[in-house]
Length: 557
Image (cartoon, rainbow, N blue to C red; front, side, top):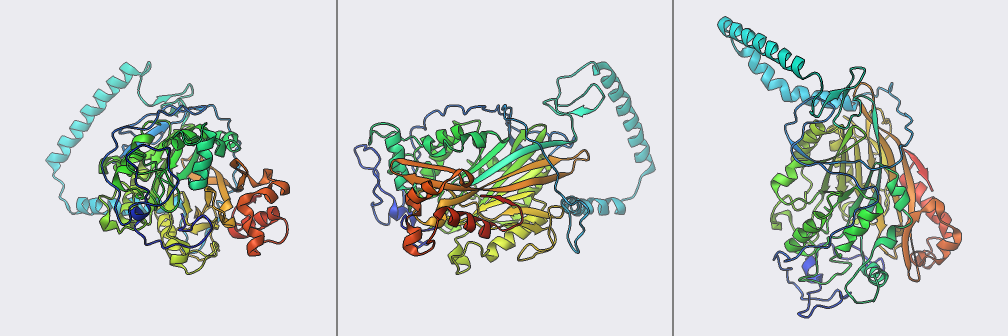
């Protein structure tokens, strides 16, 4: 999230966040909206005594399964573990069409399959070298052969004895085709996916949620009206993703507040689950805004929503090592998350590297490799650094060196999809080559590149900066063919807009928006004041989206 105030003015991103935290008064209040507090004091790190409210299950809630798992559909034992959610909702099946040019062969460009094969060869090279140097003992060979024959005989007896049916995770269909645990035949499969950007509760949104929950000042907050216009759309996809830009830190020590140090009520988790989100990123540059106790409280709140998988902020090193995987339609998708840093803190100031997973290429390599072992497809979320700090430009179409460097690195690791947020603005969508680096994505196609959505913008924030009112929803399909090859197909950018007028505030597709609504949108009032748009604000929104996102994928406005 960009370090800008609600009126759009740039702030010092190097501040100590705690200095802006409103300290909780001795007598419990209704949730002060003031940003004043004890200057220079770091929030207390004591664990909260209580936990957040129980969240109601979202419509079409999915069953869960956690623990160490064998990778479904591969027959290969993983070297890592995975925390999985098996999606079993009644979301309608979407038709998948292939647009991939599988015959493209660019100079120096590698396909995803080649990247994974090369990594495997490099990993196995030392073992092959050692075997070549060792001497073969004839007696030892004879013993090994005899042992193998004995194992084969015993295995044959066991198979013959149990062929009538088993309760294992794998079986056979009527035609002898192998199936996964849920009975779906291996081979061809697809999963539909959608992702939106940062969900941020600024002071105006807190005030609205307070009023929507009933009596103003009663301590209750209802955020669900923000997502009513999107609920049906989100629920139609197998997996729906959002980045929660502000921590749910509880109000034991500090008041709920918006910019610049965020603290969001626990009921936000209820609203996001109710809206239909399955995967929630909880790792941004605002994770430590209320320090350690708030991180731990946020984790305890999300733990009460077992149908929602969180990524990026973990309870321990062991918890971080459990790669998050969602299983649906006989296919599995792994999710990873990284943030460039924490506002006001150096990495050395932080208590560990798992409460907020930071940019670290070696760690990324290790976790992406484990994710490939556990899942068919790998998605990585990146919280980029602020645009004006990196490039000296406020133009959202200008990519930073940091963005291009890490995108190229992750593409080389075989990541299938990269989605990110930087500041409040939407940013370009491009294909990033595997094995080559280009500044504009030229020469890279879906067949040889990683789909990279650099910036989805603010899904909800109530910022009065016009560029923050626009955001995007990426939709695509993860497709596995009969040979087990995985591709990302049918990518589309759906433009979204936040509308705030009077007592209403919600996000909706730009394609459903009207000129009348745009003219009454309080968040777009600065367009004419700043001279950014002299005509129809709706047309400005469409033109800005198309110009910024680019033509790498279809754009719907």
